[in-house]
Length: 305
Ligand code: CP
Ligand code: NVA
Figure 1 (spheres, helix red, strand yellow):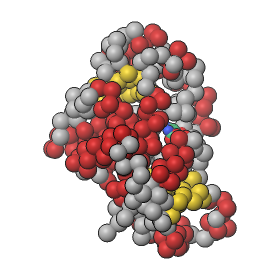
Figure 2: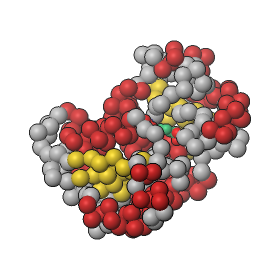
Figure 3: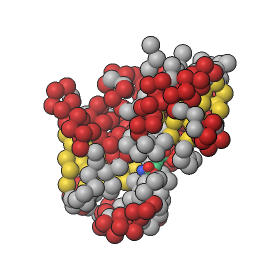
């Protein structure tokens, strides 16, 4: 039975723990010469631009012994009306797995329901689960634990925030989200995570409005762009709504001295985060970006046989 990775819920708590452990091993280089995916081909179907996701997956796939094939949907017959279902069925006959980055999350779900090989979500409008794996790996490395770590997400309740909610629920991170009214994370994702915490886990998810209050309680501060890919038409409105949510020196003055600052990148320097903070000793954004490679290698090894 194939396993997909469309959201964090596709992995159990135990599987996430094992994946982080394997990530540490891979990062330390112990199995650098092993090529568990030798002879396989993995597709990379991207409707949107990407630097980190595309390159970390392509490099990771190569390091595991496989080949990656970049697929621009406009250059496939999809662009001429072939269905997602037929595309998924046919590609499954050639490939051992497919990473998709799409506008609508339903495109990935539809693709996965027809594919007979593992499908990995490389970002949709609703989720960014591969990012969340690298995020928790980075928090673990910097803080030595996940349970009880206080993570303040400051900004838009977007795909990155949604996946952080799920990853926090699964690992016991206490998540505080500071966002303007009307820009909360997806309510269904929030409900499911809260009910998971109530029944099976520890942790907490709090939504508040004041970024300084969130920063004051945090071990980790996280932000993302105010205008995600596909939201360009809302840019001016969002920039004005979020102007008090910038991660800057004034905000960091409310936080603990050893707080770490994360950003999934790409950053819009001068909007959601200042140069000064991005480039400060508190910033772990480059380690976080590097961890995309290591966590994705562990994920590929786990999903693809
Ligand atoms: N963080 C992230 O997914 O970056 P890219 O858009 O460059 O892939
Ligand atoms: N929220 C951002 C994340 C980019 C990695 C977007 O969807 O554009």
